[in-house]
Image 1 (cartoon, rainbow, N blue to C red):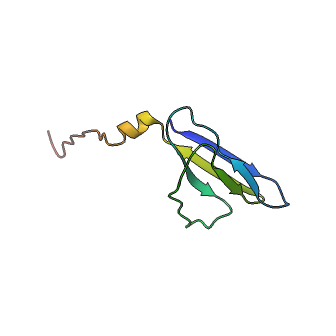
Image 2 (cartoon, one colour; image 1 turned 30 degrees about the vertical axis):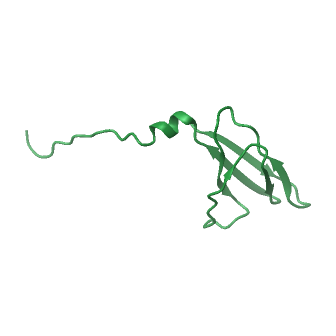
Image 3 (cartoon, rainbow, N blue to C red; image 1 turned 60 degrees about the horizontal axis):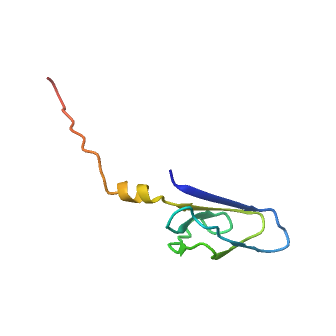
Length: 87
């Protein structure tokens, strides 16, 4: 399974800067969504441990990190043989 980081802000006074934590393995954080941004917003930036992300008031932010074993298996596609029709 991938690693996920979920952050929520109930702060009404302004943005809250959060330092991203270290991962238990090599890799980077990738932003999945931020409710303060437009849904069409695409963020391809790779965030590293210690990077600061600014969370808007009353928003939810989700980051993910694909574990190394998931990255290695990503290019493996199972072979499926389908036999259509009669016997």
